Image (tube, rainbow, N blue to C red; front, side):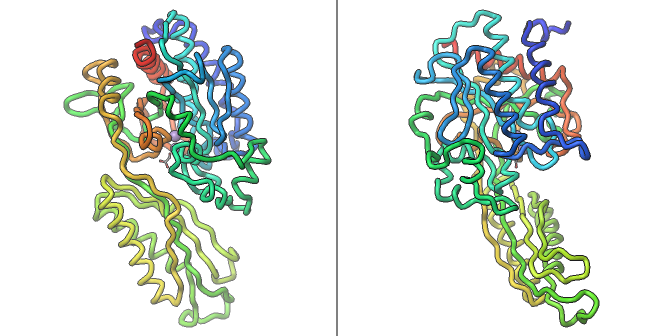
Length: 418
Ligand code: GLV
Ligand code: MN
Ligand code: MN
């Protein structure tokens, strides 16, 4: 038995059991990745699992007005609560760890603390924030954005999935009343801090730095500003076999050139720009497309760079569109400003975990980032040996996940017991 397993006691087994229970849920055999999109059957299975974990531990279970799940150890109406958790939904063909690791670690950390006989003086809650990835309706972190009031009910009601299903209809079909959604200041006013454990989505902890070698667990310092933009390229459908090249208004050409421009401009800015999703109409092999719709995900270390980068990509798209006889429309679908995590909380976590704990920034978005606008938040990252994420090959060793769980338990003990 390792020292971390000793520290966690029977919570080690609880961690393993929970992990193996979730592994088959929403798994897509052909890719071995996960398709746990918000308000689908796979998501419902994850949510049932969460409710069962709460019940098995005698926790007070709640679903808030926005569909986020809460499991309370202590009084849900008590003041100064410490909240931990993450999300259970996934990107298309996502990995097993992004989200679920934080939820499983939270329940296991609570188990370890109870076994240790901890004596909290404030409530502790575990959450599953709904629709973190935005894989189905296009906007990430819908649950935490609504709760924080940075997404309005009207904006949420307007969201549709690829089949045209409206978000409120998907919520209603899953048994969640969409008329209740909106800012939840009352709930957040009783939360003193939110701490989210997450698999690292990069190789900072695996590589280490000259000053600090590789580490199993680190503390987050900041999240890069990031957003999603939809590029609509309207051309003219026509016959692929009979339309002369010079007579075409082919939006696929404009799209392809925009993808290349985005890559080049991101490199020049030292930033990131990704077209990872595209839809084509009519989507026929022997037809020139009438509409190509591409979604740009762009991120940079600071907001000025991000704004300049997206503006340059938009200009390049419009210039090329003009040459191709195509109309280009650019719409910003979501935006998250830079997040600097609460410095006292960050420092408290780092101090608790040891002076050599790495403190690292990330380019990935999280509910902790959204909530940081309204309450103090912090994050713990668990080493990812390859850095791969949003992919079936995402991985973290069990030993590191347990080390993360033990670190979370220590941090929660510190925050709840005084
Ligand atoms: C969420 O994982 C994101 O960074 O898009
Ligand atoms: Mn993710
Ligand atoms: Mn995540």
